[in-house]
Structure formats: structure tokens, C-alpha cells
Image (cartoon, rainbow, N blue to C red; front, side, top):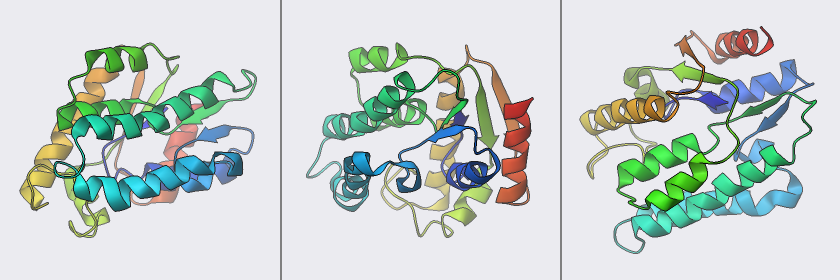
Length: 202
């Protein structure tokens, strides 16, 4: 599993690994990795960003948010369970980041979390440990944030930094019983992808 805070570069790394590890199967809810027969996942992701998140707390509750996000969790679980065990598999965040964000948003449904935690576990976690300062720049100095990437209403630097540090802490807490390889920030996506590849094929 590939994991990291917002702006860690997971999508860029996955895209490059798709070219350098053709024998691997890569799973993500990013449209580039969603099969045509699962186009509903891409549509739900767009609607989440375009409609649900802007209305969170007014038009939609955090419990409704968890219900929509669960579609991504179950989709990834289904794909993991249906995978050929002879084919190496890399999953972008699996359920871990969604669970962490639901916890931080105030979703209290422990039964939901227990169910997700019962899913097949990754044999290894590669954590892209990018500092908030880098992630902030990658988010257009805060101009490209959504409400699940910062504390407070304004999306300023202080709220972003606080949220991202808490997200990192929560992600590591959720994966504390798994073998985690921490990778520090690399100068560019190509070198980050190469560092991840070295871990995967070691």
C-alpha cells in the first residue's frame, strides 16, 4: 500500500510506477486507474468534490460523507479480494486515509471503522513522508484545497499545517501494527517513484 498525507505525490508516483512496473497491478480511485466498467467510481469522486464537500456541514452531514466515501472503500476491497494472488498488487491508500479523514471529521460510527479494519491487510506500507510546507506548495499555496485538507473555514496555512500533522499522526496510528517503510521527500516525482520501486522489488 502507498500512503501519505495530502499532497504527498501518491498519484504522480502511481502514474510513473504504472510505466516502470508493468507486471504489477495498481489500484486507486483516481480516474487513470479506474476501469471503464467502474466508471461510477469516477463519477462519485467528481460529485464528492464538486457538490458534497462544498455543502458539508450545511447541505450534507459528516455521516452522509462517510456513506459516500464508503463506496470507494468497498470498491478497493472488492478489487483486492478479486486480484490474482500471483500478480503483485499496489493500492493507493486503501481504506486508511478515508478512515483517518472520517475520524478527523467527527464521524463516530465505530462499527463502520471496525468493519473496514477487518478487510484484508497489506503486507507492506510505503509512506511518502512529505512535510506540510511542500504539500502546501503543491496545493497552489492553499488555493486548491478542499474542506477535508485543513482545519477551520478559511483554508489558511495554519489550518492546513495543523490538519496535515494530525492526519499524518492518525495514518501512522492506524498502520502501527503493519511493516511501514518511511520515505522522505524527494526532489521530484521521478525520483520518488524510483525510491518506491526499490522498496517494492527488494
